[in-house]
Length: 419
Image 1 (cartoon, helix red, strand yellow):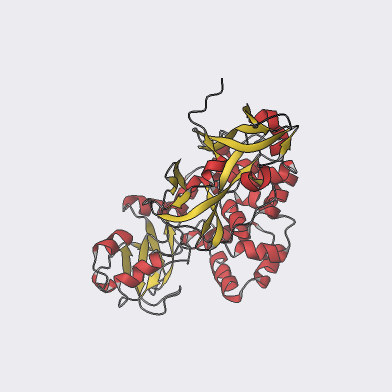
Image 2: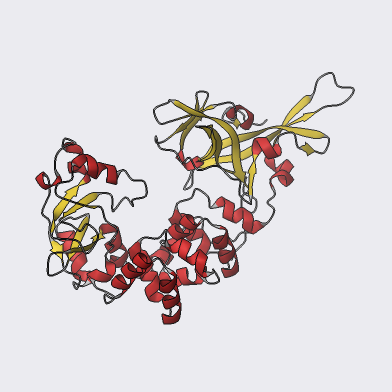
């Protein structure tokens, strides 16, 4: 007897509305995106295709709070309106699988079931088949485990399936999977990733692993990926390159970005200057709280950077004019929109770019800072060091690899075996 009380059917899902976090309909679900599992694992739901604002967009399963009779409800109010494009290794249930023949039967539906654990989500568990014949007055139906129709879900190539499975995963989890793969498979997957996605994954890897992963990428692709990386992470990577390769990369970069990189690379390793990022929200003391919040809301801002606004006299690009202080996001929420930043600025300790990493860590811990401003002798703001940056330095050098050796996603290659 097949338990069906907790199954959700794809055909039904494609008739549901897409709901925002408040339960308001913002679109309609058109299809379900799945990918083959590793080895004997069940196919997994990557997300949903939705029609919204006259576009077909992708909704990651990780962003879905619930699927029930009322609709597919999101965890938050924001959505990515980039047009959906199916990628190699992905399958669409409604478009690709329904009405497919399995022997003398036809696929009429696919059943999904929610699974918990380290990576909760929806898996394919059963397939509903219909048999029609000349002597049958009506079709007969049966519900079978997905394994009886495994060929329906077989990927074109194991590597394509592995690349598809990484879609929607946290970059740290993606890094855990990638480092467990043979080097050629790593590079194949990296070559297939979008620039922004590859940049996020690189930032989660030690510099030595970064260099191995990008080996073979042409200079144009490298620049596209580097454009998406945080300045401090990119400086660390460039610092590990050979002199000739680094010179070629800097020569091919945008002039302003190249100048920023050269400034960061000019600071000795192990100093605050080498650790800081110049990508900050910097505004005038005459700017208003409303203006500051508009910058904080920018989805392109990294959360650690968007947590505070630095206030300086002009110019407002590092190195800035005279540094005045910082206004934290929480303070911005408490103040009227028309309030000037000069009226709510907070004075916190600053550090020179020559301070050692160890002293930086102690300074941030002593004053419970989310970030610390780096200023020169003339009180010009050069950048800031955020708490997530110092955590990387405070932990042992190989902490990422040790953590990933215990990661549930690590240790299997794209064929489901050991690397």
